[in-house]
Amino acid sequence: MARLPRLTVPGYAHHLIQRGNNRQAIFASDGDRQLLLELLSEHAKAGDVAVHAYVLMDNHFHLLATPNTSQGLAQMMQAVGRRYVRYFNGRQQRTGTLWEGRFKSSLIQSERYLLACMAYIDLNPVRAGMVQQPGDYRWSSYAHHTGQRAEPWLTPHPLFWELGNTPFAREVAYANLVQTGIASVQQAALTDATLRGWALGEPQFVADLQKITPRRVSKTAAGRPPLAVK
Image: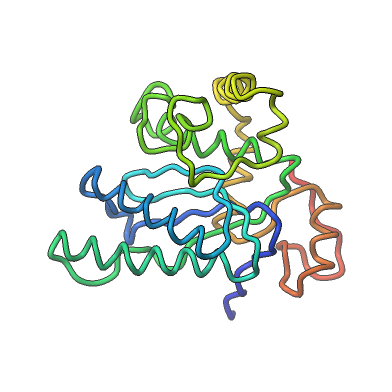
């Protein structure tokens, strides 16, 4: 079966995962991590992509981003991927691929999943047993969202602004949201949709989305109503 084209619609939030080939490490030092962030900052701007959240794990990374053009996400990820692999291979005196194929992505319904996806991303190091608290991990957007560090290249989503009327109120509200965690069903839904490349949202959202893109947005067969996410 031919692979479906990537589901990307301008103006919608997308959750992305890029994995190392065979789950191998994609970073050998903090300098590597910093370089990847610099490349993301540069190419997000060039591709007109608003990046809302990120986490760099040992063998993969996550992004939450909204593209403003149909090709922006792919262009950003391709440019970052090529430049980082050249750098990493040169530093490690290795050759060949670093990534496990093309990046995985899912278009999500912001009103239902965006803040949950931000928390899901920032909680990755905790779930992996790397730290006890998300604030203890240097390589995620958690510190930015909670006022501990400023990363000007990140773009707050409007739903983040709605968490409070002042920066302090938003930071406290987000910290409380992450501390509460997300339901296991939401976590599973975010992971599954991203790895499979489907849209994630309520049935009406998925149906409305299908009207504006020729690419099939859910696993449901054409002409049948999409299944609700439980």
